[in-house]
Length: 154
Image (cartoon, rainbow, N blue to C red; front, side, top):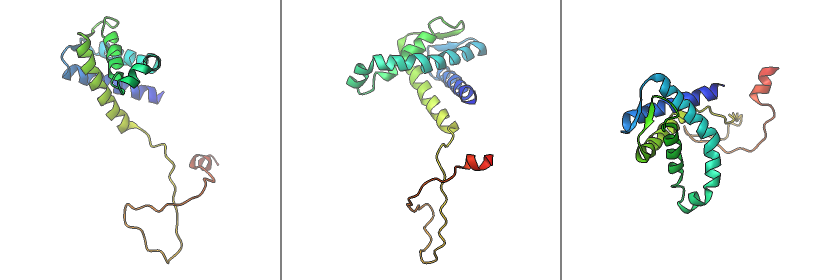
């Protein structure tokens, strides 16, 4: 649930930024902005993957340049009268708005992304090797015997 709310908030904030930067994208009240962010997030999660699969030949031929057009079509769809108080005037407003929304959402999701990596600490009790300079890492091989989550449960 937390991930959903963070994505909704980041999409809504990105749409807010797009309304300030791109002429032709407007909202009348906060409720319209929140609903636009929610609908755009749902469309990006459900409809966009289907559109990407069906347009795969065009995406390959254009070397991925067709993806912003799909994003623009979804934004144009949201601003085309589905939500009262949120408007997108024309394809080019939707296109540039989709670029802004994609960029802002990427930055926000990068800032709130949780590190899902595994931290490995290696203790070297040998006195013969000099310490590594700061920032340097020593390559080691091994296997994980017990994960931190499993230790905390005990």
